Amino acid sequence: MSKRSDAHIRELLASMASVTSDLSVDTVVQRLLDEAMKIFGATGGLLELTGATMAEGRLTRGKDAAALGEDAGRDEGKRLRVELKTRDQLLGRLTLGPKNGKDRYSRIDRELADALAGAAGVALENAQLYQDAADRVRWLEASSRIGELLGGDQQQTQGLDSVAELARGESQAKYGLILTPVNDEDASPYTYRIAGISEHVHPSLSGRILVNVGQREPSVLRDFETVILKGPESVLPLGEIADGGYTLLTELRARATHYGILLMIRGKGQPSYRRIETQMAAVFSSNIAQGIGLVQMHHLHEEVRLYLERERIARDLHDVVIQRIFAAGLSISALGKHLPTPATRERAAGITRELDTTIAELRATIYSLRTSAGEHERPSSRILRAIRLACEPLDFTPQVHIGDAVDGLDNETLLANLLAVITESLSNAVRHAHASAVAIDVERTDRALVLQIADDGTGFTAPAVESGLANMRQRAEELGGTLGLDSTPGKGTTLRWAVPLD
Image: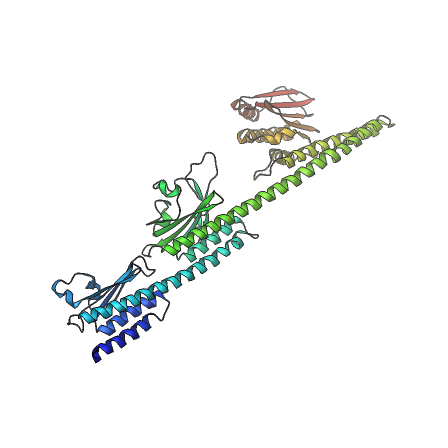
């Protein structure tokens, strides 16, 4: 072996040691190109990496390096081309320009380059395996935080925002969004709510309902696993994310239940997602689904516990408290017959009426306890508030009776008209009747809703102003009902407003 060949081998071994001494993919590819140019005295170098590596792209050095990928024709002998392979997997291609700027490469040069490429391929694969392992650890550590973010005292919406931001960071994306399905009988299968957003997503998108998610590519959302799209438009047609690039879409599924979709959207110009990223994103999404399922199960458990507690309180009120009050009322009523003066007997009768009112209110409370707690105020509470506001000018307390079944009223249009009639009729009584007593009764039967208001005021033969009564009559007629009015001068007025129930 000549001294020149021996020197080349020593340089090759030193270059191999330099290339393989680091576990960073970026460092390995940069050292490979630099060492190859140094060994062979090339004036330019081009390293093209395939999608099998996490550093996909082109790396250039020296003069006219960008053109080295093209065919050189008769000067092809002045180019040195080798492939970086491991177990028949192509990782990249290394191309060097003319040796010393003008010379051709010899057979020995090409053999040395093949040896260097083989060592570089192994080093690149090892670096990639190391980076993949580090990425797995990073994703798993992020997955372990999901339970903490979704649990605790914060609302689930805030928790999903935090999870979306965590996903965005781990995937090195620009945007992260979590979509949850809208479970409504009238909603289409493609209807979702934006339940979680990351940084860079405009806050106005939070909570928005999307009715056409994935309709451009329905196959994406039908039995999909992890999908990489070129852009988010086919799934998320929102102008606010117009600068979105490669989009990683994973399903949030656990225990055969679909909980939603996780979108990780990179900016335009960013590279696509690597295989390890898609694999770990699927694991991450599974953990999100498990967390959402546990949160929903916890909320359901709390609702059941609250329901059982409310049922117990209602049962105690009905079986114990009401019975005792009723017995006390009977005792006072019986005692009143033996009282010596009319005043004391009237006082006893008044106490009995108060106890009857208390029993009615307790029954209303029992009814409300036995109905599921909702976001809307009960009809009886809205009626009582309207009565209280309308009767504020009175110097006495009106007698009010609201039937137990009124809280079962679920027709918002009918209820709104009822409240308007209550307000209008009580306003007339306050301004014109000069009454010392007003009785208000609201009852709901199987067929009708009936409002009756009676006062002991001045009464009338014909109203001076018809507009208020006309409005109440029109409201009744529009609902297929009637307005009845019975008034006698000096004896008071009774109004009866009744509408049928569908």
